[in-house]
Image (cartoon, rainbow, N blue to C red; front, side, top):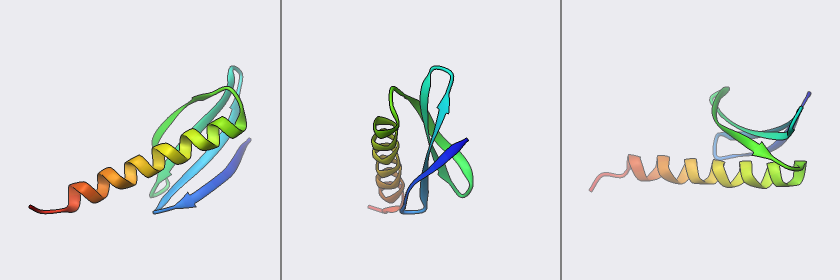
Length: 66
């Protein structure tokens, strides 16, 4: 069963246990945007938060016009 993590900038980070450890999932508009493995729940939350921040930054950059 998943745990809700941090929400920010329209991204939601979820952490769930899987047979090999933990998985972080970044969702955007209720769809999976990114995911990956982690050894423990704290690492999973940190990795997911970093990925969400990177996605948000890339999205902001892509909307800028030069």
